[in-house]
Length: 172
Image (cartoon, rainbow, N blue to C red):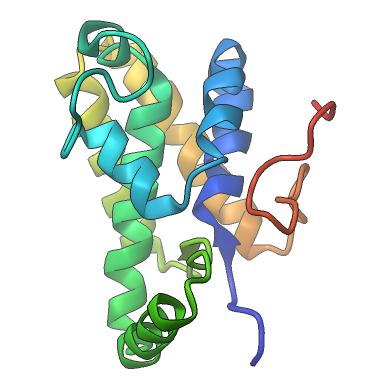
């Protein structure tokens, strides 16, 4: 099986957060211990028993990480479905369930200019809904789009995921 074309959501998130909110990198690195589906559920707050990340929801509402991760993940899943790989992905997901393997990271496919514009608008909306200033929302949205464009141009990830799906400790 060939590797998917594009950049993993977690690579994009780590790079963007490193650019615009480097103080949140420990949170991103901590989230790397989970598969992408679990991270998205925790950041959305679905299925949480108490506090999903060890601190209150009020603190997470002002963080950049949830804005970036949730919007890039949503775009990757939506635009990947458009490419019609959904059937193969569902079969692979079923096999992973039978074999009890960790799901492959979600990958952002190459995006059109229009799709990049949609991602930018989603980031702006999510950031302002979470209480970030308009200036900060634009900064984050521009960083996400820039990272996605660089990914399409073949810019290699600055810090690749290790085989277990997490970041390599000690690299910053």
